[in-house]
Length: 451
Ligand SMILES: Cc1ncc(COP(=O)(O)O)c(C=O)c1O
Image (cartoon, rainbow, N blue to C red; front, side, top):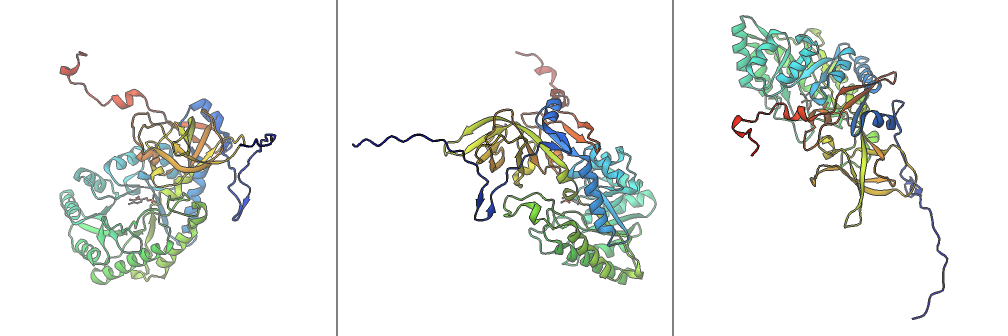
């Protein structure tokens, strides 16, 4: 074997992010601050993991959405979808901005009332409203959206026992070209069921139909589907008026506008592919304006948009706890927040960005949580620079659904912080403690002995 000539070893610094055939490669983005407040100082003060909400974004986005609709249509009312995020501070901010509450259970109804929202400013949706909740809603003047015939009959029984007529609306489902269709909720438009239910109410001695509601689905990327929904509701209102002389006070087009998050299966990031709110507003309001309304009376337009308002106001701060090289060669990071806190990881390719980038090669990385379960994947693959235990990452946008759908599983749920418009920080939900988990439990006397 011949001896190879000696070559001096060289060290070459690789920097990914240089030009490729698509132009400039991936940028090396970091999130050192949230609304001007250093993430490192937040971790120092409040620990990790930590949810952070931006009051500025919450308010600005609300105003933007409200403006998009109200500049096109004369009577617009937003109703904050509690299920999207029902932390008191978040709901209060929306109520301060003028929002009603949209609730889908007696628990959410109670949350809104506790915050001082009067019944008349609550829209009550959902397929199950227990009798006493329904009665309370009628007594307090809430806007009840009936979901099915048995609920309609129950509403009639309650109205009879109250000795007066009560106002109701019906939820309507329909084919707007969005699949899977959300046809489990309400009465179907295409089959004529919704018109039958409306006629049934118009003929009732105890109920008055004042509105029509639909919510065609969630994360709808196609504004034209809303044009169809608005047109169908207007058609239903006209047919009902022809039959029974009923004129409606309002139509509710629900929520479902996409936030700028990115679905796993989407090619382009949400920041590029989500339609601007103006496109949804244009589709809905132009359909309502084009419709002929009985007696020329334009109904109030209600909207129950959730994720499009709140998603981008929420961040999750998490820290690296370990580096790994998986048997297949992939680089992995273990972080201190997992899918129990970040439910939306299952459907979104969240931005996972370092707070600080000290250079080095970007590498495709799997980001795992701490749950000791194989499904605990925050991002299956994301380009990240080398990071050490203790380095922080920011996950965004995470403001929608996480702090309602999160689970307490083997770890405490993290605290939630609000960064005010002046940079002030307030804990709006403290981190959980053992008594929050064990408090409701009872150990039967016969099991109290330790041995
Ligand atoms: C009846 C109703 N209204 C509003 C919403 C809010 O939807 P989104 O967050 O997609 O705007 C939901 C959520 O599914 C809902 O069920």
